Image 1 (cartoon, rainbow, N blue to C red):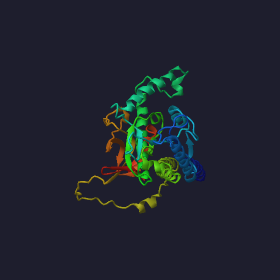
Image 2 (image 1 turned 90 degrees about the vertical axis):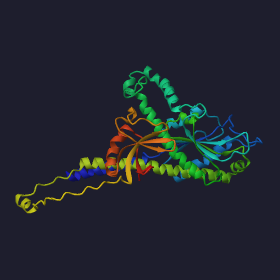
Image 3 (image 1 turned 90 degrees about the horizontal axis):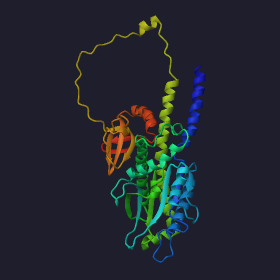
Image 4 (image 1 turned 45 degrees about the horizontal axis):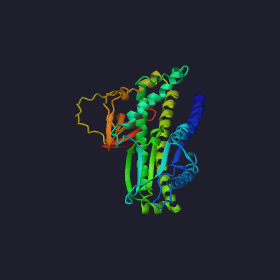
Amino acid sequence: MKRTIHLVLATFFAITGVNAQNIGLTTLVIDPGHGGNDPGAVSRDGKSYEKTFTLDIANRLSEKIKAGCPGVNVILTRDCDKTVALNDRAAIANKADANLFMSIHINSSPKTGPNGFSVHVLGQSSKKDRDLFAYNMDVCKRENSVILLEDDYSKKYQGYDPSDPESFIFMQLMQNSHLEQSLEFAQMVSESLNRGPITANRGIWQDPFLVLWKTAMPAVLVEVGFISNSTDLTVLKSAAERDKIADALCKAFKKYKAGYDHSVALDVEVHEATVQAKVEVPVQEQPKPSEQAQAEVPVQVQTEVPVQVQAKAPAVRYGVQIFAGARKLDPADKAFLGYTPEIVSVGKIYKYVIAVSEDLTEVKKEFVQIRNKYPDAFLVRLEGEKISIAK
């Protein structure tokens, strides 16, 4: 019987191991900005076009990732000089169930002075001073209400009701989770591009770009330089320098993928350990009376009262980050589903962590259940005011 259990477990873990390799970051969509009858930004002499530079960098990046990460399916929203609508660009990524979306652009200014690169994620509109996520919820509610016209929609959508505000809690959590991951990737892109060939770093921005708004996964838009600046334009016109830009973007992707895959693999590892613990339970034999008598050891009673020392807060703790966002939520908010979060402020972003403990093993056990409620949750390490992905 025991041999049979081991064979079943071996088969299960073999299958799970294969799946673990396939459930990491498997699909990337690269979006070369503009194209076709939309040239994008144009140089002052009218000879250089944004659409040409972005397509070349995207093609180079695609080839580098295919060579360095063979298991990743790389999809280009356009592979030639053609027009692709903004909605269609996002739709391509959504249909492919992509894990990450990267849109490549070239910046421009009426003045020749501005230069450098910048990285953008979806966020609050600084011009209209309103939260785009709240606006997005209204649009989603209106668009999703069409499912009510379908037969038996309640079963098809597992009870989802577009007229019920409670249904949008999870949509908002998903968007917040995407913001968190988008910011993580944006930081990696910024750090990688900072090494050149264009070294002026204009920072990471939150903006309401439509192409980012429509995507259903972590997404960033990269402005790799200014076509209106002579120094940046010289770099962009060089094939060798464009290759360096593509190489920097590739390095950022590899770093992000490593962290992404580690989080997924850790989830599978915890799941496997849980299943194994449930299936293989050792049976303890009762000792014979004579053996029990020999094994008995008198218990020594401690009479001294131990001195209680005030324990210091652990230097390193662990927890499960469920989502992050630009707005600080009340710990009693329904979004936390009864959990009491620990709120970690990082810049303008609030990260919400639950199941915090200095015992990583205990946190891993709770992580399995938490992932059922928050699919995008991941393990984090807390040290003072610092927070990072748990290794």
